[in-house]
Length: 495
Ligand SMILES: Nc1ncnc2c1ncn2[C@@H]1O[C@H](COP(=O)(O)OP(=O)(O)O)[C@@H](O)[C@H]1O
Ligand SMILES: O=P(O)(O)OC[C@H](O)CO
Picture (cartoon, rainbow, N blue to C red):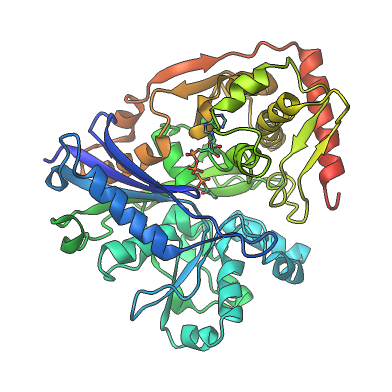
């Protein structure tokens, strides 16, 4: 059988194609930055045509370098920024609106209008989610209500909805497949993760026609063949998962209690809870980690909207740095932030606060505060937010994990990793492959095509690069964390 697996990782800030061999070793890659559109305060959009162009381009490049050829690919796996919503015309395949990105807050008023404690309890019970603009349902509804003529066209069955994986599947297969996997469906607020079906009550609540929805498959399944015109051969697509779930697979968090945290644009902490649907009492999400052979494996998730994006903000808005990598040396110029806290609520606060109207703040500034303090505060904010999530998981009954497996662009920063371990009092483990999202998609494709027979095989491939052990004394740690909690309470729009 062909030796390689191609992973397409369509993230918030970039689109990547990475070719792995059977051992999970990277052989070739290509990447393209994605334009971010901010058409109004709190709105975030992407151009689906740019996403498509970049996807084809990065795949073609990765498939034709370093000894890799399209013919040497056994299967493709797709992983994607989740919740981001595209509606397209079934006849032409053309999107009817820009993609509304997961970070977009435009539907906060709609969420408020639909809110009641009963409604939120019903949503939590069926979907594991909360009523928040983050998820796809209100984004679909916004498109249907705001683009003239679309509601009627949707009712007539002319429009298709998909998260990015679905849209890419549609395009890659020449419009012959309209599907998604259970992990992506689980982020829409329309999918009942207990019954594994689109839910009539939810569709009617959000006023979305069932005809728009994709078929929901396992995360390792037959998602069709690529159109021959794209890569010269027809390649089977055998794996699909939302990026955080793919990272959970790439980190081999297959046993209940295992946790991974990914530090990209946002930060997402996912704890495997096995076959058990655990409903949080502390505003964490319940989601599907992966679904194989029809059997969902559940997870608890804490979602933070801004992690690496805070570093991008230091670079692009404040122009304090030229490259993300500079933050570590800058932050090391000072031993502490001197009491400065940066709460990066640029697009509201995610778990466990769920406050879409909160906006960012910097507190504790004095005349001694300088660039290094602010940069350090931005980095530390990511660790404090992770502690908030771990506290919520523990309050829900989880025990302190043996280790936290980390990945994503930000984990290159050793200062962040050490402070994270100090704040959590847990060893932080950075694997050899930090592209675990793409790796997870490749693993799913490998499972789907029969290159791997079991999850144990994948666990055996996981390798540690470096572990960071907690070093900070308790008194200092807790004083710092109390300062963070105070800064958050001053940032909240409501309590
Ligand atoms: N050395 C570093 N220190 C701090 N942040 C970093 C560093 N390197 C990259 N980042 C941040 O990591 C993010 C990129 O991570 P990545 O996993 O590629 O993100 P995504 O998949 O969300 O596009 C960027 O927001 C960037 O600012
Ligand atoms: O693109 P990322 O890696 O920041 O991930 C985005 C998440 O999937 C949003 O839920």
